[in-house]
Image (cartoon, rainbow, N blue to C red; front, side, top):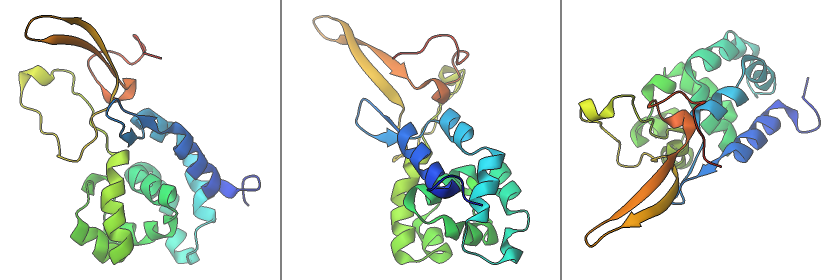
Length: 183
């Protein structure tokens, strides 16, 4: 049964859209904490009831999405391609396979959807700063969004400027998320 007049999928799409954050570089991303608060097990179960697929495809689908494919499902729901989750599960292309290559995305879906999905996936894969990143080299994919949400110049000198940056709380592991957040 649908949730309200817009249904579970429409509600999820709206919550995703409302939770997107814009970086200082004007890139848009969905913070990981928002992804997890939106795609709860009950929300996923509700959305699965609205998919256009046979009952055989629904078997364990909500649990698979919740435990292995929330990011993929969020990308698909956001773009109106939620029925393709069946194809992604069939190909074993869930969150652990992100970022997905264009070749794989085209094989799983089709040329148009696959190409667009490869571009759109980065909104759902923002970089998360590790706790001790200074201890080793960090690899950042070229298209990955760096979640700097605030940049403020706090000083300058003859050869440099000093800026204070704000990082989306759920995208860093330097300190506990509850310590301090910029508004």
